[in-house]
Length: 102
Image (cartoon, rainbow, N blue to C red; front, top):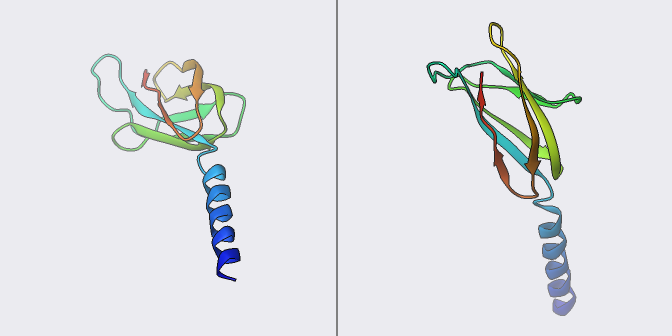
């Protein structure tokens, strides 16, 4: 019985670790290109999807649970020209840095 429990725990641990880290994330900062000040509440979205977020008071943002691949990110805010970052690569278990200077 103890042997079966040990085998079960080992298999459960392997399966759990294999399913974790199957997604990545993108984080960064949105700031004014003229004076380097943060732009709070700017929208950041993955182009052609409904996935996105807004920047915090310091201009920081993070988008989690993204499947590995390449994405086009779009950031905009009232009074600034929209900016697109093309082919931002997301890898499994890692966080990709992407900054917007609007």
